[in-house]
Length: 96
Image 1 (tube, rainbow, N blue to C red):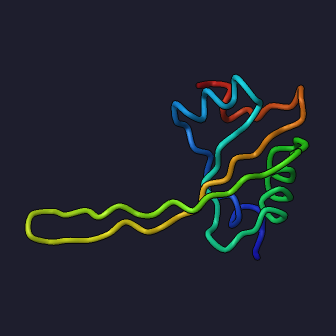
Image 2 (image 1 turned 180 degrees about the horizontal axis):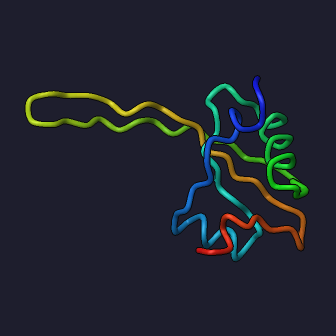
Image 3 (image 1 turned 45 degrees about the vertical axis):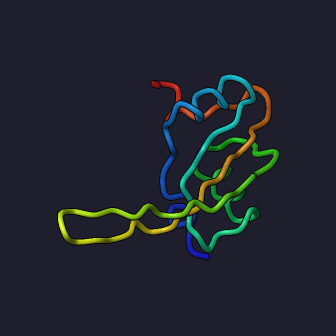
């Protein structure tokens, strides 16, 4: 796998993500489909300078879309839920 910016594509700012952050110090990320849990953990620790305790991943299937008579499909992607050590936080989420 390539560098940490290729593994972690972007943070996900959703209602569920906000609830997880408040209740369990967990953060959501959109990650590369080919990345495994070890690579995701290393990338998050490198990018955000935090300690990751565990990572859960789940594949997300793309939705079928249509525009008039044209049909298409959004790409499949992978979501990661990272649990951080107590006291650690990620600044991207703090403004939310």
